[in-house]
Length: 168
Image 1: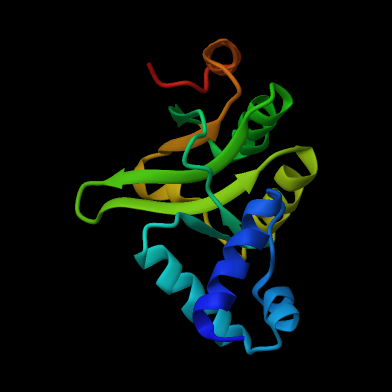
Image 2: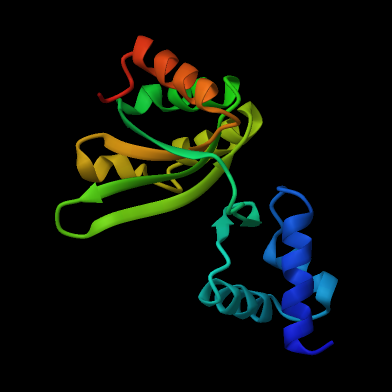
């Protein structure tokens, strides 16, 4: 299979469902190295395909999605409460980002859809393998979330506000 055809098939696989596909799994599927997959993803991104890299694998971001941004602030002990509030109310946490006064926007893809995803992410934080971006900006940070409707987004905002986590 030539590289163009492989990239087309890669896009089809990523569009098929919203479960993350690991580089190792994709490399095995296409019978190439993981580095070839990394290069293919870079080329597809350069062609304006929004492919997210999460700790669980690659996901294609839906261009027609209903995405909204929340500005929040809380201490480390409230991270799980914040993320549970979003996913328990039907939101999907796509990323976290901060606006740093020197470096500008710094972001990380999360793609958290349920409590299990949140628990896995939180375990990594507790193990010290990763540090929250919010530490760079006095705990202020943003999340891009995917919702089904404006009503759902309003409900999530209200729940975060009740808990004192939403920044007006």
